[in-house]
Length: 187
Ligand code: FES
Image 1 (cartoon, helix red, strand yellow):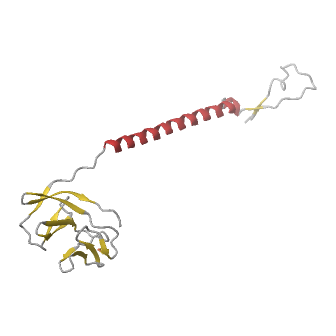
Image 2 (cartoon, rainbow, N blue to C red):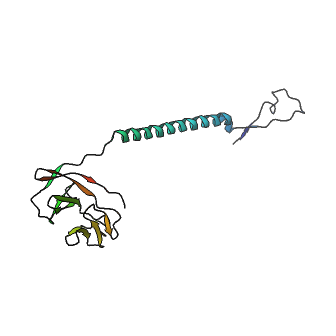
Image 3 (cartoon, helix red, strand yellow):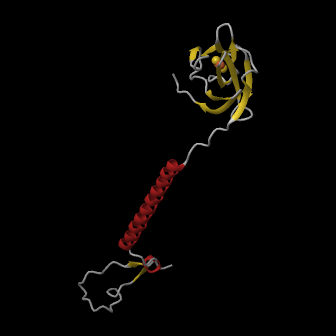
C-alpha cells in the first residue's frame, strides 16, 4: 500500500530545476482528513466556549430557581388538633397523644391548676420515650438517664444534645388545641 503521493516537483511537472530541493511528500491521510489542524483548534475552542456558556447559563438558571422558590415556599402549616379536655387529667397527671403525625407521640402534663405543657415524647438522644417523673417534676429518659426540664424542655442532664420539641397549645374553652411544634435549638 502506498503511503505517500508525489508532489509536482518530484514528478517533473512543476518545472523546477535539478538543483531545487525536493519538497516533502504529502502523506496520504491528508486526503482522507481534510480539516487543517488550525481550523480544528478553532472549532474546538468555539465548541468549548459554547459548552462553557451553556453550562454557566444552566447553573445561573438553577440558582435563580432555588432563590425564587425559597422566597415563595412556606413550610406547610401544622394541623390544629384538639388533644385533651382541660378537666380530663388531674394536676400532675399525664396524657399521651399523637401530633402532628399519627405516629408522633407527645406527652401532655398538667403542671398546675391552669398550666399545661406538652412535648414530643421522643428523646433527642436515641429516640427512647420520655416519661414524667412527678416527684422530681421533670421528664426523664430511661435509656441513658437523660433528664429534661418540665418548664421548657431543656436538657438538665445526660447525653441528649437538644431540648425536647415543644407542642404549642392553645386553650379554647375547655379544650386544649395543638397548633404547632417549636423546635428548640441546641443548648
Ligand atoms: S435515648 Fe434518651 S438519653 Fe439516650
